[in-house]
Image 1: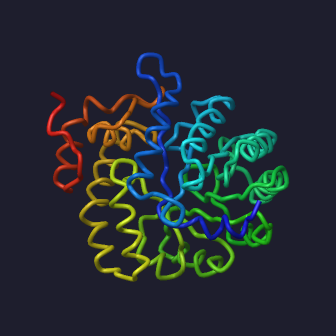
Image 2: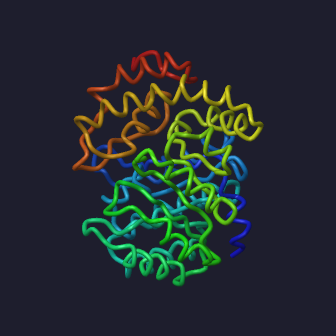
Image 3: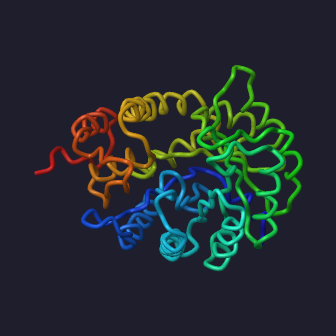
Length: 317
């Protein structure tokens, strides 16, 4: 595998695809996932403007079996047909399973796996380094390290230094609390010449100025054209326009997400409701995440209309 090429292609909108289920029995709805890939590609998410992440947190990986994760990822890879790179979430509590996930992802043609610290126990930096290296050595596949507050620990800059020269370590995705000491900016300036940095902090302008090459972008699931436009504004260094677009579209999205998560815990449910409201396939998340579509349907519709989102249905009739 050409890991240098994969690093170069790890740019634009890093789109966290929700996993589609059938609402009647919550089994995988693979045809719906294939249709969603076509929608994203038609909206401009292609090699150079984006990457698709399957079975991440927004993809309900924690409720899926190993076999289901592979089925969903393979369906997306087949639908993408080389037009856009595909990453598979390889988050797990087990290093042995990470090895299996890496090998299986390579076999079905994924470009990347996304790896995070094991959760449940509060593992040490040394534990994570061994975990990551095991995944890196298991298969000829490119790795993206996801440093996030969702899991048991944050990955230190020193730990990243110890693994950064692995030839198939190509990306660093960052989403951790900022203690006011410019931790994210430090990570970008320290590693941007060796890794593709993915901003999951919603600080797209400053991170792009410092050398980040991708932005995690949930909104692309229902409005891919906006994601492509925002990425082009960043690439053209039209930073004032990019920031205004974030205020106009992303800020209302995250405000309603914050309101929802006071009552419902999970990921991907906001994306799924937005997708449904623009006429796309959708579903609820698997339990224990409850279905938000009834309680927040009209409020979400109002937000999308206020943001001038295309294709929004004025009503369900």
